[in-house]
Image (cartoon, rainbow, N blue to C red; front, side, top):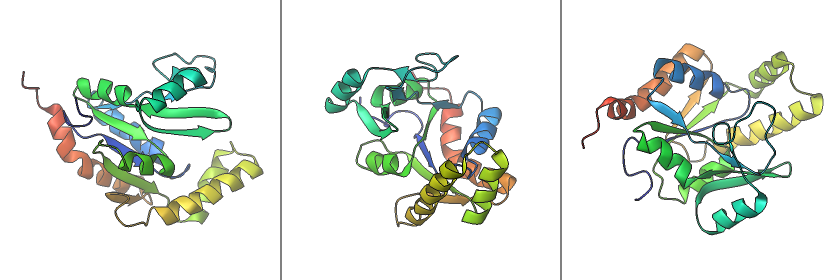
Length: 202
């Protein structure tokens, strides 16, 4: 079975921390609960309290994950602070098998990797109106140390620059007004939502 050919197209969402991705996704899942599904990522880190294997992540060893990557089982993977994370083809297919729109929340490196695969998603970048606004949002959360805040802002500046690359994204949503941003997101996904709502032909 070729990836991404059956059912609705997957959606790749990218954008810096604080741009409002998770808030927009939450609204989408609230309105269309059974239309969307998250692909469950793999990670080599240990489960945190309350996390379930297969639900929050597929927790695997580094050896297992490297073997599967070499076998071409992964669409994208990256390493963060000593742990590997990635999206497997099987995880996306599991969502598509339920005739749901598979949502992938991925960084820019992942977006570029997916461009090299046969997955044919809709690429959407969520951006804050400006770095100043992004900084204010992150400071208001009060969850960051100054050092981690500066790191996030530097990453966000690079992210904003890269999102302007021609043909990298199908749509860039500047999240200035949450309601407007949500309407734009819903509009670009309307056709896929319709496909997912139709009963499957046997």
